[in-house]
Image (cartoon, rainbow, N blue to C red; front, top):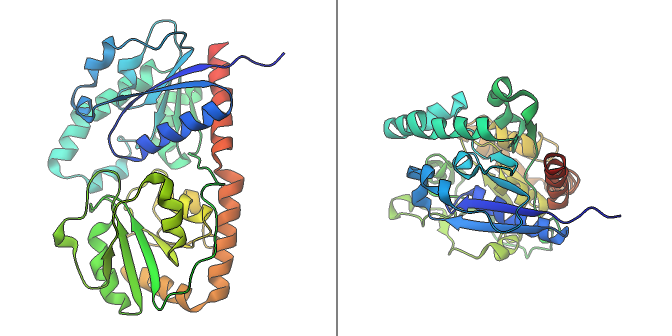
Length: 336
């Protein structure tokens, strides 16, 4: 007798971040696996007061609630197991380096309080990487597990690329110092005219004019379904985030067989796993970064190895089927 299908309530704040992407991909994977995911979106303004969501009723026949750490406590319902996924880890000590004073105060007195409430009320807490899990283990113990985010490696897959007169690099992300956007102009200046840095904004905002500089090309925003084609149009992808708990962009590039060049920030390093599948250097070290890019542009064999190894790693460790399977095992353990 086959196990029954589960109804999973996925309440989420639409914040224009990787958490949005996660909710959609998880729901798609759960539905493909024969379950009934119900994604319910709420306005980003609820970030300021997630307690207002406490009165929202679950969908009929809900078996389990799965949401993010920011608002998880607000969706705890009697008789329903609660799974909270930690995407960002606001209590991580490294994060404090990259907050302005207002951000630091908001995270300390609001976000971290809500996160801790969510951890306390959850039946299980999932971190998207071992890096994100580190500061949580002392307080959560066996209620914490790591499930890496996944992608559709059939959709994100390699394809032949037309030759270009310049070596094309791609940066994908919101135009913030957090993501390393402030480093793009000085990087382009170091590389020179033989290189083109293509910039594609993330889910939140477009590129302000102050970022415009020689060597940078700003691409129009595309639908998520078209992202594989964008990755396949370049020679390498830049991963310049200063603090990263996972690294969707690096993973998507690897799955498309595109080499990744960037910083050895913890989440990115965990996805890429060293020099066999990516060229990563110290955070903010543009000299090392530019050297890696020049080396990659001149070594066809190196580019091929990174492409093949990155693709293999994405398929073996980060497929959406693997991610969904791990979550379904967790759900069933809590529901039964």
